[in-house]
Amino acid sequence: MVIPSCPSFNLLFSPLAPTSKYQSGLLPPFSASRSSNRSLKKAPSLHCHAQLLSDLAPATAATYGALLIGGGVFAYVRSGSKGSVIGGLSGAALMGTAYYLMQSPETKVIGDALGFGSAFLFSAVFGIRLAATRKLIPSGFLLALSLGSLGVFLSSYFHDKI
Image 1 (cartoon, rainbow, N blue to C red):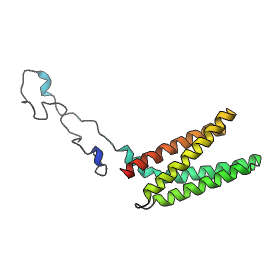
Image 2: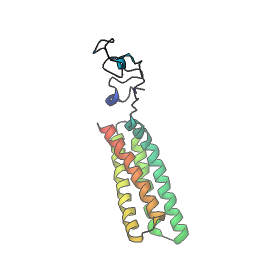
Image 3: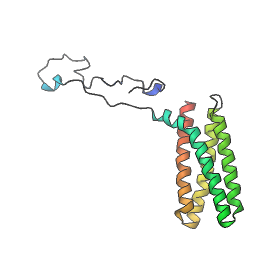
Image 4: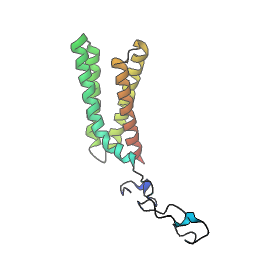
C-alpha cells in the first residue's frame, strides 16, 4: 500500500509491481528460462512509520504527562515525597505545553523539541535513580517509559523537520 502523504516512500511500489526484470518489460517475456513465466506477485508493501509516530506524538505527550503527574501524586501519598510531586507536576506541565504546541502545524516542531527535551531530562533522572537504587520499580519502569516517549518525539521531530 502506498501512502500518498509520505513522499519518501512513494517510489515505484504498488501491490502488483513487477517482481523480476522479465515482468518489468526490460527483457522479453519468452526466454529459455522457465522462471520468466511467473505470474505477478505482490511486492512487499511499505508503510511510512514515521508518519504514524508523528501522529502519535500528541497522544504520547498527553499520556506521558498524565503518568508523570499520577506517579508523583502516588509517591507523595505513599511516602510523603515532595520532590516526586514537584517532579510530576513539572513533567506534566512540560508535556501539556508540548501537547498544546503540537496542535498547530506552525509550532509542531517546537512542541516535538520540547517533548524530546523533557523526555530526555526524565530519562536521565530515572537512569540515575535506577543506577543508584538498582530497583526496577519504579525507576526502571519509568526509564523504559521515558525512553519510549523519547523515541516517539525524536521520530516525530525528524519527520516534521524534514
